[in-house]
Image (cartoon, rainbow, N blue to C red; front, side, top):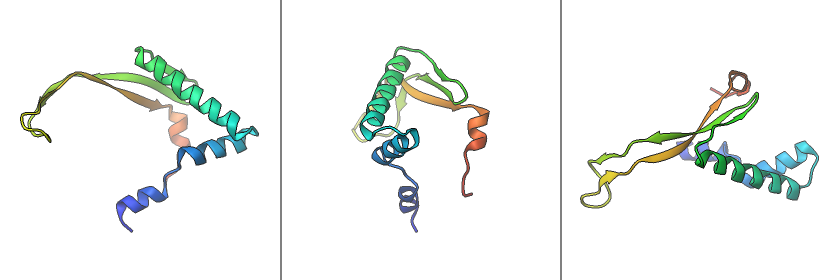
Length: 104
């Protein structure tokens, strides 16, 4: 089996995640979808404003700034520079990392 097919077999879609979340919480899929959307929107709004969001016993989400840099190779001739940018980072607690099981 190719690597991409293996990865696809282990992926859970947003739709499936929300359905499982609803079933586990004993709530409607509509309520779970609403809660999911609100949580993601709030998380992204807070982090984009430079905040760190700590979810006790789970982990923290935070912005990580990167300096721009010169680009040696690119799709376009003379691509030149990448400007400063920020990415979303997540750091799980030790307890969460212990609970994650892999098939390795």
